[in-house]
Amino acid sequence: MSDIPAPAILLSAPAAPAAHRWKVLAVGVAANAAFSAAAAGLPTTAVFMRAGYRLDNDQLGLALGLMGLGVALFELPWGLLTDRWGDRPVLLTGLSATAAALAWLSVFASPTAGVVPSLWLLAAGLVLVGVLGGSVNGASGRAVMAWFGDSERGLAMSIRQTAVPLGAGLGALLLPWLAARSGFAAVFGALAAMCAAAAVLAVCWLRDPGGLRGPGGLRGPGELPGPGELRGPSGPLRDARVWRAAAAIGLMCCPQFAVLTFATVFLHDFSQAGIGTLTAVMVAVQLGAMVARIASGRWTDRHGNRRAFLRRCAQLSALMFAALGAVAWLVSGGPTTPGAVLATAALLTAAGVCASAWHGVAYTELATLAGVNRAGTALGMANSCVYLGLFLTPVALPHVVAASSWPAAWVLAGVAMLAALPLLPRASWRAS
Image 1 (cartoon, rainbow, N blue to C red):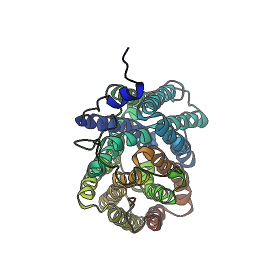
Image 2 (image 1 turned 30 degrees about the vertical axis):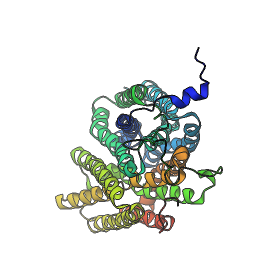
Image 3 (image 1 turned 120 degrees about the vertical axis):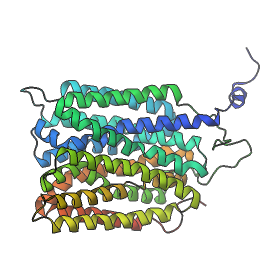
Image 4 (image 1 turned 180 degrees about the vertical axis):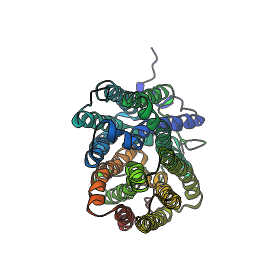
């Protein structure tokens, strides 16, 4: 037995190699992509889900929104657990349990020949997937924030956030085809396999950085904490600035969710677009969002203008949705013409990309404000707001369309972007 006390042994333990941060980032991307394939990919099967489960639009909106409700209710508890237990146990538990819930849906809640599961059986499974999958964002985000320094965090978090459109894009390519050819047992089975594969990567690569920051962002012994890393005992839950930022993120996500959950229904019902057009639009939205998120993260790291970027993105998104509403209103008399289909599809794609471009920048600023050690809680707060929007948006949108029209629904999506502007402070979000 060594005579060195236990605390000394811990302090003398070597730090993890700085280059390992890219593997940690890869785990974050894989975990978020796997869950996003379910959360954002399943809505691309909306037309098939409506037919397979024999739902009307109101029931479809409820089913698609319930996963978001599950995430909204449990994102904050998962974030608190992440800050208390650490990234690895939370992420492994969440991914494994999410894979199990999706496997259960595949076996027990998928339509078969002559048997259509009830709406409430489907709803219960989707809520459970949301509850368990809510662990992914806070745990992976905290891990990335811990491994990367402030000069790289915007890029790193934006790369991690590309996992959302990456997963959704993979879902848009694969899930409608699986739903049409093999049914929802194959859809949920494929999603379960993705989550299980991400859990394997987490087992292999996700670990603590060892408390040091050297090249690439791991702190060296003589380096002071970065802005916001040392917070008072009250933490993010009692910080009004963090709550305002979280609420702004939630509002700015609502237009994106409107596109993800009902774009295929809009193009199918309003423009009679075929599956090729539906798939092309959704894949283009997700690929465009990936490119925009990486570019915005790199740009704002170099120029230190995250706050200004967020305001401009909100304003431009509002303008794009207003234009989409105007064009949809103009062509409403003859939406099946090729020109009308092309115009609405192109504007829908552009609006969807713009509404998705800012995520990495916003999450970086939010986590920096709260501090790395409290990043799990802050990200949980934001994602509670985000997934509350994912629940409310698809539930409310069919009622807006029924009471008014599709053009009015898209204009209202732009108004949500404008409503977030007062919550985005003119001063930097970084703590002084």
